[in-house]
Image 1 (spheres, one colour):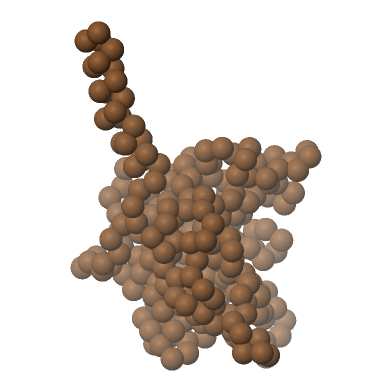
Image 2 (cartoon, rainbow, N blue to C red):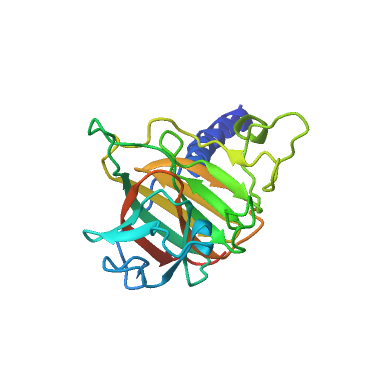
Length: 248
C-alpha cells in the first residue's frame, strides 16, 4: 500500500511539471542593458535589402522603408531585409501589424515572416535565404517554414503535412511547413501583435501575443542573420529587439 501511495504522490507532482514544460509562459520582454535595438526608429542602418527585381532595374521602388518611426515592409517587390550581423543564442521580440488598406478602407492581410539563422541568399527558388522562417501570415502566425535547413517538432506526421513521395526537409519539393500549436492567437487585423522568438542552441521557441505556438529542436543551424520579408502584403514593425540568452 505504501508503495502504491508513494507512486500516486510522485505522479501527482510529475504531471504539472510536464505540462508546464510543454507550454511555457511567455517570457518577460523588458529591455535589459544587453538588449540590442535592431531597428533604431530612424533609418535602416544595420540592415541590407536583397530584392531580386532590383538587380536589373535601378528604378525599382524600395521594398522596405521607414515611415513615421516604423520599419515598413511594403510587400512588393518581393525580397528580404537582412541584418549585417550574425547572431546566436538570443530572444527576438518583434511587434508588428498589417497596415495596408483595401479600396473599401479595410485592412489588407496576407503574408510576411521573420527568418532566423539566415545565411546563403536566394538559396531556394532564387528568392529565399537559407533559414528557418517563423511565419507571420495572417491566420498562420508561428508556423515554421524550413528553407534549405530543417527542424524537428513532436507529432511530425500530424503537424507537418507531407504529400506522396515527399520527405521532411527544406529543399524544393520537400514538406517544409510545420503548423503551429494554436488558432486564434493573432489580434484583429490592424492591431499590434507581439511575437517572441527564443533561439538557443538547436532549439527555437515561439510565442504570439503570449500564447506558446511552436517549439522545434534539432535545428540544423544555430546561428545566422535575421531577416524580414516582403512577400506581398504591407506590414509595419515598431519594435525589433534582440537580447542575448545564455548558451546551452
